[in-house]
Length: 194
Length: 176
Image (cartoon, one colour):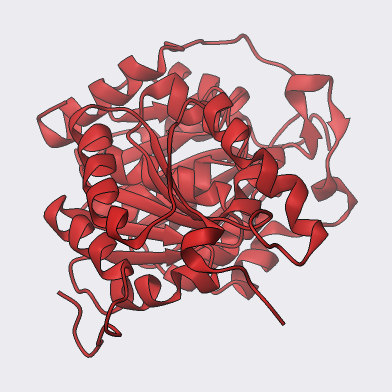
């Protein structure tokens, strides 16, 4: 499957193309942060460079605070596996404006490509559905980008999509690692104040 | 104000809730604890506060970080054992300067009957300080309101993460 998966950079760029003003993005540490930066840096992106497992809950708190905005969390499979409890927390809370996109290479890519649980059959969309997500789907190559955008950008309720992506490392596109800067520029862009 | 909820006479947790209201706290995330029970009910009954029950305490740091990014103030309620679950996630607060107020009911001190609570209870303050929190310990009911207001001000006006420890002397040691 290594070379048969979805191209992660094309996927992320496709999800963020013609980005609406009210689409707020949270990324997990590692490759999802580089993928989102590669699609174009934007002050409405909040990149995590650590605190593994926190991307989904940052997205939840943001979604609750901004009910008229759409929050898209873009995270790796390893990140989400560390936060399976957060799926229960989100499922119980049922925010109408939160979407999780899981870039699933069935690997811990940052640390040498060790196999993750998803390659051994752990089914993240099934877990999300069991937790009460309105809809959760798995996408494989060839990617139906229109369907993925519809689910992640339009559909009401907490939703989740897993994308089975190709393995292998891509050139790193590194946004700022200054958390204070990322936090304040996000608030300036979204709230008009620091 | 809470609706359909009545405080028991003398419940000092009312002072904490009043500090939430005065500081315009809009989100409260928690892992339940008996010591927080009436405060949790009051927040559920308060239409101005969105409550989120967590499966584990570190989720609350993410939730409150997200709340701040979205322009809302939040607080995290937990018991002392939960502080240990948060340690790596504290890095999110320090690296980004997220305002964070956590109110912690203590176990593992002052008459604790269960030795399994003591290890983390005795390590709670050090873990919070290592995570960058200013820690205030409260032993008396008449100190609660002032400490809660001070914590809100130091955090939301000053940007300093603050942890309030509600001691077992205040809450009463759990017994069977």
